[in-house]
Length: 394
Ligand SMILES: Nc1ncnc2c1ncn2[C@@H]1O[C@H](COP(=O)(O)OP(=O)(O)O)[C@@H](O)[C@H]1O
Ligand SMILES: [Mg+2]
Image 1: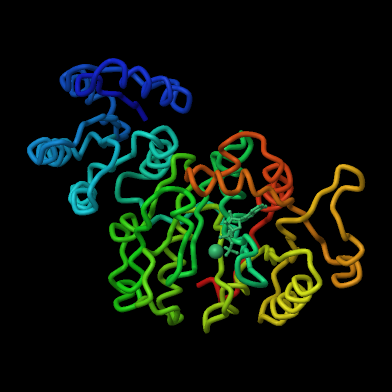
Image 2 (image 1 turned 90 degrees about the horizontal axis):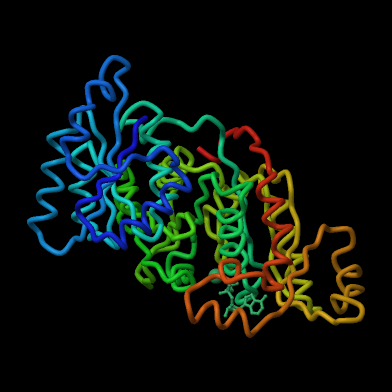
């Protein structure tokens, strides 16, 4: 597919930055300053082999008129050109109008290269309408299960997701982090993005969840990690019926290769069903005697689900680390958890606090010790193989 970057709509400094970043992902991108330069080559691009060409269109969304113009351009050319508009942000209602043209999508300036690559991969599979086409492989589901409150379950899930999206080996995988704490979600605070999943709408009307609505629910992080999280509300019911879950996971499974689940502490009527569909379950907890007991109880509960996940391991977070001797109180772990596979992640208050206060995950800030400890978890997640589902996933 030919990909063009339209240069006339933003200043040269922003254009250079954008071009530089996009070229790293799409080396063949061609710069054009007038639409005619694209339309005159369209017979070649969209002709005999029927392939769409794609034009990347940076815009400054400051006036309704400029948005209306985007919609009309996208509608006019939709048989031969697919537009990806790029701006810092876009109101949800505008985004919906844009996608409804059938000839356009949107990428954020910060996440541009990854988001563009994702969109191109999607439309490359057979046109703009192929958003619902099934992925070539079954996705893998990794569940982070907290054994108690505040053990760092969300932090572990986030850091794993960011490591997967920043490591050269895995960054092309489509990774989604689903926050299942509908009432008290805090993943988006940690990542400084807006939660967008209106879970009450889905619960009330599951059959309304189509591709367009789903796209509106996704929050894009600049690393390329996609997040599904509901705006915090005590009115959100934590109960989802099996049909809602089925429709939601059908949408997710069609779009992502790797799904990270951040579960809440209480178990609901859907928890066992979800865990039965996961390939890997990571039970998180703390290395104290009560903490390890919570972990042991959670492991028993996980092993009692209908289809036991292929891999179950423990992550002990906020562990004390000594220069001599390494992680403290390993013998407690041995006594209470026996032969369980255990990952130790050290306590690093300074970096953790800075991370939540700045909205920048530790993995994106550099080489912190916590990131080093989480790296084997990201490796485990990346190497998990899909187990053909026998029901619960769908
Ligand atoms: N390894 C760590 N070292 C220090 N603080 C941590 C670590 N992991 C998480 N935290 C902090 O612990 C608090 C609770 O973490 P969070 O991920 O929200 O837990 P949960 O999702 O289990 O409630 C947060 O302030 C977080 O920054
Ligand atoms: Mg949490």
